[in-house]
Length: 210
Image (tube, rainbow, N blue to C red; front, side, top):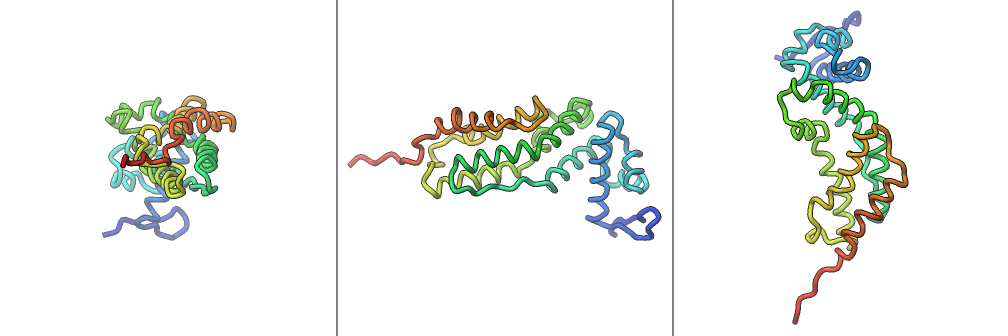
């Protein structure tokens, strides 16, 4: 049986994915409006114009609801993967877009984490980080670097994963620390002074001795 409920005053019934989307949107809006500390299952239900039992049938408590709302917002507001034709251009564009699109997201998510979400959810900081960031970052990284590999700019077999992740990790760090988009100069410094020197020459495969 598919769970459903009536939209207040409209006579329409929301079901399945449409209902869950409405609930998660309401939870995110409530999180932005009042913060994690003041958010309650009752306040989310009121914002979604539904009964609290509808929420509890899906999420055991507000911690799980908030984590689901953060994941939902992230997945429904994806950042495009640029294709400028060069590794440097792709990285600068990707990191700039990430900073502009994710600053507010990280501000809300970080505030929730520091307001009790970590303790209430019973998860480690790493587990919460992974749920907030998600696996789409890995797909973005792979796409950018695979294109550069195919163009002959780098040799992916010779570059450690930690190096490939480093530009994105640094931008996320700055976003969490400053809660605002990074300046262009900072992004170019990460790419030109830190990352590219580490992978320079990686496109040249060692020749076999004859």
